[in-house]
Image 1 (cartoon, rainbow, N blue to C red):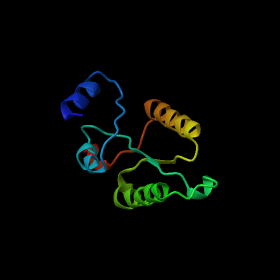
Image 2: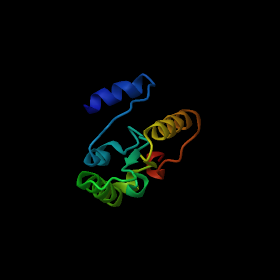
Image 3: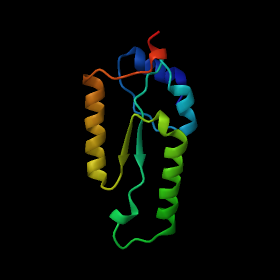
Image 4: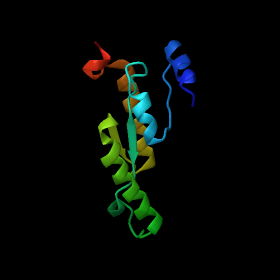
Length: 110
């Protein structure tokens, strides 16, 4: 996604939903874009009964590392234990952000 595309979406008073690499958060988390950042975390392995898969363990470890390194950028963390519940939580967050005032860093205001 190009920054100009995001600017065009903002100018139209639309809300874009982006799936970005964590490094992009440093560029996007500014007053210009004022993002609401949701991190969809890997499921808790104890929630996945009977599964002892290396790829799932790696996914959980990567999820934990991302939260440690970039968690200060996240406005909301949703643990993806159930896909339908995750979608409901995400939809609720989108509704809340579009209807309710949100806290922003003071540097975005002044």
